[in-house]
Length: 482
Image (cartoon, rainbow, N blue to C red; front, side):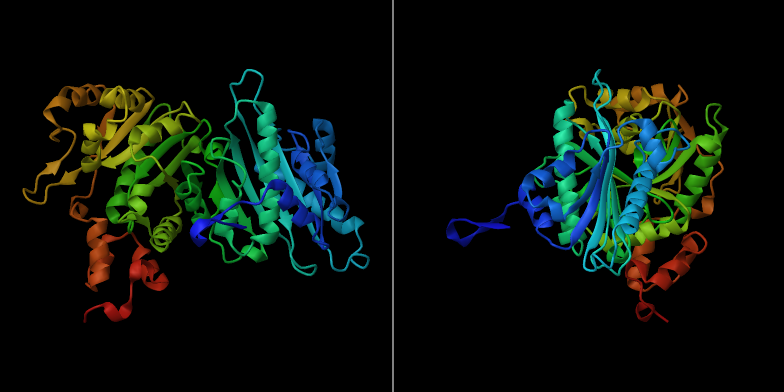
């Protein structure tokens, strides 16, 4: 809704939770159930209090006891209750109950829905702040299949009652968005914070599914979570579906490769394969418990201050086609990335990077916001069980191959660099392919843009074909010179 100001200016004012609940309640066709586990029936309470809920709420329940929950929804293999699989079982079961118990003949115009959440709020010791899964399964026509929105939240408040209230408001926003903003997923995403603040909760994963969202690319929704400041990092898999970072990284060994991947080149994949091989040789590392991540920062996605979403999807498409997990982060500095990984694991962490990127780590300008400056950053970076796998750089002027043995940092940083180098924290990737050291993404992109030939050989097998078939990075046959 809009509020008129002086000078005919308008500002957008979010509807209150009561107004949203009333609009859903006064829709004579919406009819559904609420199933909430772990923090009380905080969402449905808004609909009861708003009034007019008798035509909207078919059932409200909270299977709070674990045995009751298991009897209704089944037992999870891992024995946990606050999981995505639990939430999806709840949504599926409750929709089946509606379809079974409510006659379509008696309710021919009703559009059914189920809202569910399974959460854990802050513990008494206030060590774990709590998190949860929230979702809705709904239809907008009695004859259509169900669409679904599933998201994960991390609570930031330090009081259980406040977290419960936050969850209730979020639930109202989600239900309202599903029915009235489903054709505007960007607005729906932002509306989840209506009457809330980002200091109250973090949304770090969301997936849209079903006929109403057949056009939605969940990777783009993932990017928007970071772009909108809802979270600092998101992750998606080779299939394009968003993944929960905390779930993927929990107690795992992590090897991350940062880059622009615009497009992904033979150098990127050579660096990855060599680092992958060396990382798995570490005594503490087991392949079955290792996550390999291609990471892109918001800075790398920005073009003159703006994020080109089409360009982002082009990069994502190629990395997914190579079977890679992709992470988008708001961590320009490496120490922040490592600090983030350390929230979820105490196992070995590896960073694969080129010499040029490694030298930038020793530039003090990146740490002026820290009271301890570069020493504080390096304490956070290398205090953890971290190793850097260094890919060589070829000096284009002199032809010199630069490695950890002959790289040059600022004179003030020499002793700091030596300390980490001779303590085994920096390892050269020796078995590299010297023929590809002059391959750079920016060069490939320029060749594609200019219509030059020869860029295909600079890319991994199959990538050039994908670029041509999908018309990625502005590729056009007509532009290429004969």
